[in-house]
Amino acid sequence: MARPLRIQFPGAHYHLMCRGNSRQRIFYADDDRSRFVSLLADSAKTYSVRIHAYILMDNHYHLLIQTLKPNCAEFVRTLNVTYVGWFNHRHDRYGHLFQGRYKAIVIDADNYLLEVSRYIHLNALRTPQFSASGYERRLRHLSSYRWSSLPGYMRAKNAVAFVYYDLTLSMTGGRKSYSQFVIDAIKKEVKNPFMDVKYGLLLGDESFVKKIRAECIEEGSKQEQPSYRELVVQRVNPHRVIEQTAKACSVTEKEILACYVNSEARSIAADLLYKYSDLTQSQIGDMLGGISYSAVSKLRSRLQSRIAKKQKIAVLYEAAEKGIRKLSIVKI
Image (spheres, rainbow, N blue to C red):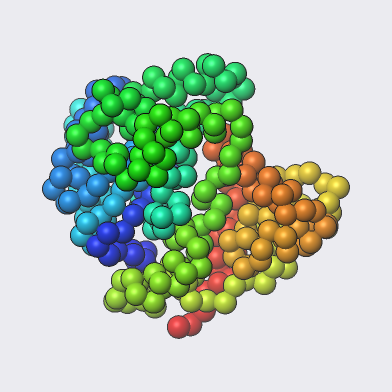
C-alpha cells in the first residue's frame, strides 16, 4: 500500500483532524474527553509540540499545532494509539476507533494561523441543534463549551498550561480582540480558510507552496507517495472534473454548467475545479455559466457547511474526488 506523504520540518504549523471510524463516536462521556485532553498535554510535552488550539467533538477532533522538531507523525501516532488502548479497555471493545490515517495540512502561520484557530473553535456550533439557532444562544454555547481551547482565549482565568496562547493573541492584540474576532463570525458568515488549501496538503500563498515543494518534501520513496504526485503533476483538465462530478452525482454535465440550475453537483464541481484544475474563482464562474467570483466563493463556502451536516453530500463529494484523483496519477 502506498504510504502517504508526510511533510515534516522543525517549526512547521499543522491543522490536524482525526475522525471516528465510519463517523462513529470517539468520545462517549466526559471521562473520555478528560482522558484525551490529559494525553494531549502529555504527548505535547514529550514531543516538544506547541498546542495552539484544539476542540473535541463527538466523532472527531481538531488540533492546531507547531512541531519544534520534525516529528508530527510520531506525536499523533502516540496520542491516538494511547487513547485507543485506554478507550477500548474502558468500554470493553476491540478494533479500530479512528477512520484511516489522520489528516494533516501544513499552514502558513503568518497568513492563516488566526483564521484556522477561529475555524477550529467554531466547530462547537457546527451541529444540527445550532444550525438554526439565534445569535445569543450560539454565543452562550460557544463561550461555555468545555472541550476546546476557546475558554482560555476568552478569559485568562480559564487558560491551561499546555496551550500556547501567545502567538495567536499577539495577532489580534489580546483576549478581548480575539473574542471579538470569534464573535464576528457568529454574527455573519465568514470564509472557510480551508477553501484555499492546495493539493490537499498546504494552506498558504504561492510563495509558501513553492518553498515547501522545494525545501521540505520528505525524502524517500516519492514515487510511492500519492500526495507527492499531486504536488508535481499537471492539473486535471477542467472538463474532466465536470465529467467525473456529473458521474458521481448522477446528473448531466449540462446541468452542472447551467447557471440557472442550483444543485449540490454545481457546488461540488466548483470546489473540485478550484482544487484540481488550477483555475481562479473568476475562471470557474465563467465556466459555470458566467456567474461572478463571489457567487463561486459562496457555492464553495456553503458546500463545506452542508458537507459537515449531511453525510450524503460528503459521500457524493468523496466519490467525485476519487475519480478525479485517479486522473492525476502519472509516472515520475
